[in-house]
Length: 573
Image (cartoon, rainbow, N blue to C red; front, top):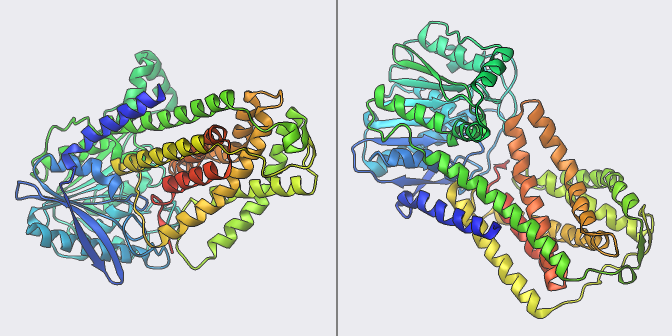
């Protein structure tokens, strides 16, 4: 079933991405010492759309919106900021980083003008997060006229609280000179500000204050009482499938309606949904931008109710579920069919439940080792793949802690000395395992190219792929050695699955707490490392049992994990 789902996802994503297939042209963008790439799509109309994403969003994450505007006949260009995708320079989040981003956006816009031959008056600007902020700063500083600007959750901080991006740290814009000078006369082109209720990065108060500065009038959005909302939802009695559909459609809400407020040239669009990291994939947000572009900026657009973003998100969700399902079923089948390592071969006697419970104690030791390892990797004179090092360092720390405890004969719940090299190699099954791992790498590459994550290599990303592969090879090797003990010797496969769940618990708990406290973007970023780890742990166990070896499957699964998490990371200086 999982394989059928994966094949269906591959076909579906190919069909959804076909309008942009091989139609893009690579454009070099030079900003100071930074060299990055953009993708240009040549349209039939004499209008263009220049799209800039948030910090954490590379070109692939912007293809959903790009395809909608390209389908309208406009020429479209998307670009990578520093530290993203194909950029040769890491993102420097030190003092003045906002100004450096503005310069990069200016360079990208200039490259778009040269490539398309369009004047500013024919170009619509679309930005998200820090990209939207950079466009706003450019418009406030330059006396240039554009077709219009749609700013989706521009990352300005005007609520009196120090806040900001999960990548760039906190700041306060109340004394930022160019924001303080904003007035109804500052920007005269059609301007849209898109705000969503569930945005955990950009507060609604900040965007309301921005609207006040640009129009001279205050904006009040009545907020429903939570008890009233629950009462309305219960009265509507919305079926579960419809709730799921609306959540995917709008990014976290069962209500799809929104409100727009216009004063002069500025329109404020409020949507009761949309987590910050989901906004560029939300039908509600994409449709709101397109409707405004058509009605206020005179931009020709296709149907405002395009379901392309929704279908793409559904394919991604099915693909992720199918990968997890295939990995779990593969591991279960391999454990049932092929024998593991007996207690005699391992050289230990196991006390199952006690050994499982004390793995949480081992995690405490592993966490200390993992934090030390993370610090060593963090101080290396290379850019850091944000949010990716710590999970890999922690799981490696656990493996090292387990190895040390076995080495000194102090592992609780077991008795005896663990023999490390105990696998029996089958050359035929090893060959088939290698072919299947190669096929998985190709599949992951295709899923990444569909916009799920970036799969570019080169420079410092290659360095980190090598480092992660080495670390995770050692981790998977030791983990599979322990997993053999729990899944055989009369203990049962269920203990093997429980063992893997215990391994992931210290990484899943922070995700749960972040979600409970409304830090959705941070939660998604951590899940981007934890979910691939769960999948690769399962595949490592499956191919280890299938081949009879341990090192080769560990290397393959480690490379697969590196491929899933490193190329898509933001490189921070």
